[in-house]
Length: 492
Image (cartoon, rainbow, N blue to C red; front, side, top):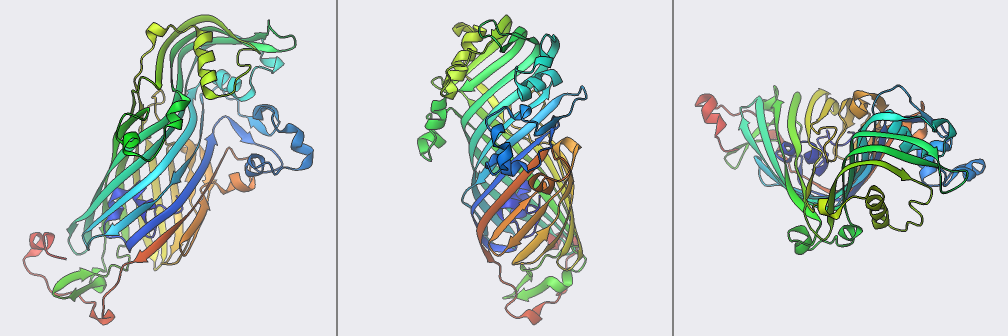
């Protein structure tokens, strides 16, 4: 959030609103690399005396080293939030590889981009099932409780994306400007695993195979189970056969579509004539306020390689997961094979095709220029993915983002309600020259207020800015004839 609403966000702004590729402040912008990591949940809060970041990288105080390797729910570092409501977790990362934005003229711009997106999530999950996922079975107080009417959806998704964006200024009516943009995406899946529980009943019992341990007795499980084999990940490569052929586990197309409106009451001071053409100063942000709306990530990935894809409907009763069920397990395929064997899923029910959707969302933003270099933005993202869909999901959020920006430096502080409008956060982002770094959840990084999420991103780019009037004294507003409709099609 700290970068994408900026007028100097380059290709990162295009991901949120494809219309921002037109009338950019950049003549050419090359994203070298950027990375983002995030986690958010409504199930637990972090209560350890050190941050989540220190736990992940192993830099914890010596007296807590003994906790490493234990289930995170049983370390005492997390405080469970029990309220009877369904639980969710979103955790993952994104790597944005080479991407370029090119301004073709005052009216047109294009961008090409590449990235890898991975997410591990569960949502719409019954609290008892979510507790099992957090603590495991080795909690005596959970034993013997029959949990009925359980439901939930868990997904592990990973895919690569290549995209092309085209944007144009549709209408320049002096003080009112409309821009539009379209992005077409090629998405190639390199891994997917998902399990949906429509109706389940389970309880924790004594393990009949191992003294002193507990087992999970599944009295009923109705739903579905699908996965790609680990070879799907091993085949991933930047080759035509993988990107467009049949070597991958699955692929598909997606698109983003959006429009931007700008109100420019002071358009005269940005208007000049050069070589017989009426132009606007491309080095300046000319709006008093800007409103953008986009539909993003519409589409999906169809996994349908029979060598790599497995899909089973599930309707079973009286199954048990014991201490020995997953011993020894050395690789992901072992886990899938054990689950299929445990549930006794018949090979005749196996299919080799299913669809995994992109994290479709509606993005709406507004930006107000309070004074030169000082802006206040509003960002709203509403997820369009059903809770039970086999798809990535972007949690809905609403944010206010004050920022100070210039060509070579910028600072912003997003204040947001994230994770489906349930998690208040404050972020901080800095851009200096060609590099930027930030977080949308500062409390999660520095351990403020028992956070239930964290976020960190950083990147580097090569920016080449557009050139202004050759004679800066040439800015003036030439008289126009013919009225509104003649100005609509005039040469800029």
